[in-house]
Structures are given as C-alpha cells and as structure tokens.
Image: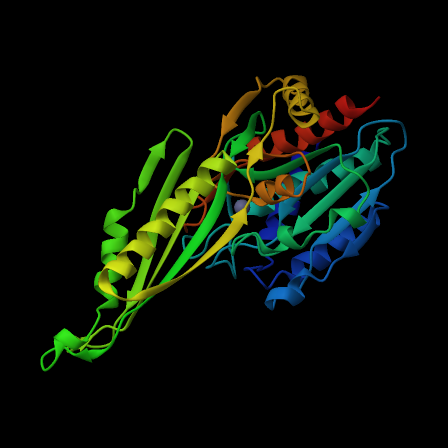
Length: 372
Ligand SMILES: [Zn+2]
C-alpha cells in the first residue's frame, strides 16, 4: 500500500530543493541516494554537458525478481522559473505555494509518485519484473535531457510511463503531434529611408509578405502552424536589411507536418524572390509524435492498471510535447499520464494530493499487471 503521508513528505522535500532547468544537481543527488538505498543500480549520464547544465539524467535499473514485462517510469527533475525558495502550503487535498514561485509539481509530483511506489515495492517485497526509472534534466527548455538518453545502452523496455500531465493516471495519452521548428532569416539591403529608399530592400516587408501568405492557426483536426516571433530593424530611418521569423508546425502525421512546413518555406522563398532579396530557412525537428495503438503493450498495461485502482481508462490526445514524444521518437512505446499538477508554469500552480497518490498506486498496479 502506498503511504500517503510519506508520499506528501517526499513531495514537500523535493519542491523545496530548487531545480530550475540546467540546475538539477541537488535533486539528482536526492533521487540517486533514494534509489541506491532501495537497491537500484543507478547511473547518471552526461546530458548536462551538452547544454551547460550541472546534472545529467538519472538512470536506474532493478532486475526482475520474477518473470514479467520490462517497465519504465519517468519524470523530469527541472522546473520553470521562478522555482527557487518554494514555500509549499498543504491545505487538505491541495498543495500550493505562497504565490511568489511556481510549485514545481511539474514534475516533482511524478518523481514523488515513482519514489513512493518503488519504496513500497521493496518494503512489502512485492515480486516484480525488470524496472527502470529515468529522471530527466531540462525538459522545460526543449526536452533536452530526454533527447540525450541513449536507449541502446539501457536494458530493453516493453512499456514506458511518464507522469507529466494534469488529471489522474487513467488519462492515457496515446497521441501527441510531431513538432518542427522553422527559422527564416530574410536578407534585404540597407538604405537611408529618407534620402534613397529606392536603393533599399526592406527585410521586414519581405518577412511580412511571407507571413501574410502562410496558412497558420488550426489547419485540420490534427495539425496547426504558428509564427511566434518576428525580429528585425534598428531605426525608423533605415530600410531594414535583415529580419528573422520563428515559427512551428505540428501534426500527428509525419507526412502532413512535412507538407505544412514545406508550404511555409515556399512562402518565405516566394516573398524573398518577389522583393529581390534572399532568405535562409532553417528547419529542425523538435520532437517526434506519440502515436500509440490500443493494442500496444503500454496502452494495454495502462488500461488494466487504471481499472485495478478503480479508475476508468480514457485514451486522450494532447497538443503539447513532453519527454514521452522524444522517447517514442526513439522507438520506446511511452505514454504520458496525469499526476495531479494544475495551473502549471504559473505561481498559481497547485497539486491535488489524491491524483499524485493515484499515480503511485497506478505504478504498483502496472507492476502487478506486467507480471507474466
Ligand atoms: Zn512537465
């Protein structure tokens, strides 16, 4: 049985350890000590070296004590700012802050739920198949830790469960889109805007024409596109020589997201050509899609585990991207589940203890259901 008081205590300890992205060292040390204490083989990779962080992903493994599917549980250790000096306030079923910081329930609720479950497994000597735990770094600044994980060096994974969503763990994410980023730098020609404007080529106008000709917003039930940032110019009396736009496209289907980005690129090139300028377009796949089928082991296990703890499984789609997208992109069948976080990325963030406790119970249920 999950011990609610201990779970809450772990959560409170975790949120009081500041761990804004790139600064997860203290949380990594905390979880490493806990997992080693439970007999897990724990490694830390060098993910932080890639992007100036002070910690890597924590990768923990325990061989099975009986036959069963190999399961993986994950959450991320970093928080968005303001995430230091968190003063959590417990109020019945709710944990919130004093309103000066985020809570960090995103995603320390996931860490606490996983630690409580694996503690219970050891304490009650529950027989289990192989278990892996991954706590990633710098999820909030582009899923950087997850992108670094090398699954070729880890034991095989049959089903992976991430806890990084609102609601309860019976909300099983089976679909979340591909995400491609676009950066277009338009090059025109500088000239004095008053003395010789006819000798200039205005890059802001070029970028504007490109954006105006793009199809943006919701494009169909599974796809959308956006231009989110436009930069350029130094003075009103200069015909602007350079302007940059930053945008993205998302779709559940790879062909469709490629098609949308292709259209956006064409709009940029046509606008540049029309104005006599040039454009450099950079395209980068930010993360892959979650596209799980109802009969995949992950979905089956999640559904049975939800029922086992008295919740009706719901297969849901998400428009956002999490570490689960990255894992799926690397061939790991990963879903993302609710763990009670609410109003995340704001100082009004709070946590529903019942949902975090349900996530912990859900993990124990997965362990039971995964046995051969
Ligand atoms: Zn998160």
